[in-house]
Length: 409
Ligand SMILES: *[C@@H]1O[C@H](CO)[C@@H](O)[C@H](O)[C@H]1NC(C)=O
Image (spheres, helix red, strand yellow):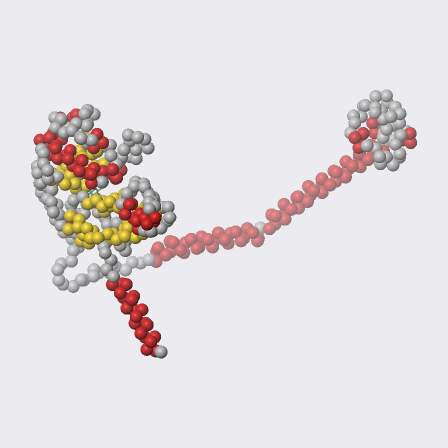
């Protein structure tokens, strides 16, 4: 029983180890340093991964897909590598120029998300940066205004552009060094209209010195013409023509970069003081002389404390021992109230006597209950057509104008 358990455990372990040992068929791509590298992520290839059985039924999908690329175990791509994809229905591009210090293997993870089914697929790409194969001391950067980066990265377009430059440079030995969107150089996002593009900078290099055509880019006449806003499309001398209008170069924004002249290395930094001599022990500096903090203590703690104490004592004296003043004021208020009371009392008495002295005078008619203001006639309360309890008098009557006689007679 125990033997069989151990046997099955061993079998499980073997299977696990075997599955770990299965070598992933990674595609290793050599990438020469100091030269442009472009890798196209083709949606077509990933479409097969997402629907391997659908082909069997002759169904072909064209799904939108987005890519997310990063260096394995890192959140982002290596410094020299960039990724771009304009739209989920377009292919993506990994591109960039590794430098001499970026030599070595880079494992790139690519996560593809199918935006129709939301399936994901992961692929690994091993980029092996190898030392530069082409020496390109003479470089030049050209600005192509009527292009977008994704439209220049396909190799066919790169070849078209290179052919035009080869004619101007009068050499076949040209290689792309870099391709940069003008947006990465502070360019502006164009209007979403036909005929408006972001613009692309392409940098090419060669071991062949510049042709006379290209050297004219450095002449003062060319600069003057550019500043005057002259012909920006044609290099002076008309020694180049762009085969495709969209590949035409804006010569005023193009520059020659000569790397053959060795720039003198920056001078060594001068040593300042405070650098420890080689060997010997570290002697810590003397600790600073002790400082007397007592005056500070007096100024910051004792004086405010004494002031607070004095103020609180004064406040306490005013609150407790000067109550006299408060009582006097209270007494005065009581006097005034008493006086008011007396005057009100006296006034009422006076009014009462005045009212008593007019009992012999007839009461004003308007104070009588039933009185017709127009005729001056008095209606005795008993002759009222309404029952004396007058519960059923319509309320609306009470609201009628007093000078309109509406009472039925
Ligand atoms: C290529 O262009 C990018 C973007 O402008 C820049 O960061 C990078 O340094 C360039 N690389 C080389 C080798 O010129």
